[in-house]
Length: 311
Ligand SMILES: O=C(O)CCC(=O)C(=O)O
Image (cartoon, rainbow, N blue to C red):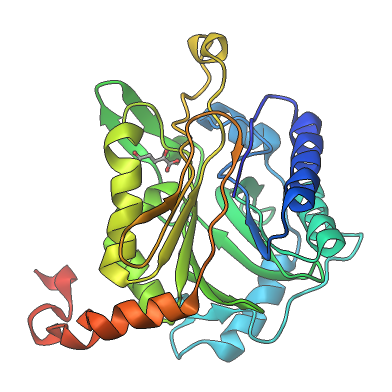
């Protein structure tokens, strides 16, 4: 996970991320790299429209593939099982082209954090994540499904002022296995993570940007809770915190603390708020051992809670 610093200059954000990715992989090989939530743009409802990019027909191409593979439920398909989609030079999104090139050049699975996306047909904006395989082919796109709308002392934020929510759970398959994907506030919703686990994910990745109000209480707790609830690895990758002068000037006070948690709920690696690289090893056997030893998935009482939305 790369906990990247983010500023107002998009080109500087891209070139910094490029250097950081190359340095991190030169320091030590990784198979999969996760970038933070909203890393080529500052995080703020007033910025999303300015930094948004459109993805052309890529959603349609991916959805046609997922449609064929969906488990009879279009909202829960598993992406990537028929391979990825090459991005032509004609792809309208500069950042997706950049991510594709980086994944191919370094031969890694690259989870591109998230960026603001504009849907050309509707004009709506989304907070969207993308995943590329080692060939630089697009495996999956995901639009944050739970928008960050809260109002508590110290933090008021209304993503829904400018963003719309996605309508599909994201599980993707790559050479390393099957992963769930959510964005930040999505981590607060246990049902979402459990669907990912029941679709076979061994890890859930959450690009996320908690803040200095909710972060200290909730970020690690939620990552650990989702891991223990579902007996899988959970990775949360945040941007680094801006300088105090920038925060005083209105920048979002990012919590940082990118962390990796194992299927027992133990924090394997973490960091503070400064730019950082956080490495974790994901061991599929650990998932199996945890699930075999504490078999909650077969002990569930769906006779009591098959459909909690009816309560
Ligand atoms: O849930 C929280 O407290 C923070 C969520 C957040 O920052 C986000 O969804 O971007």
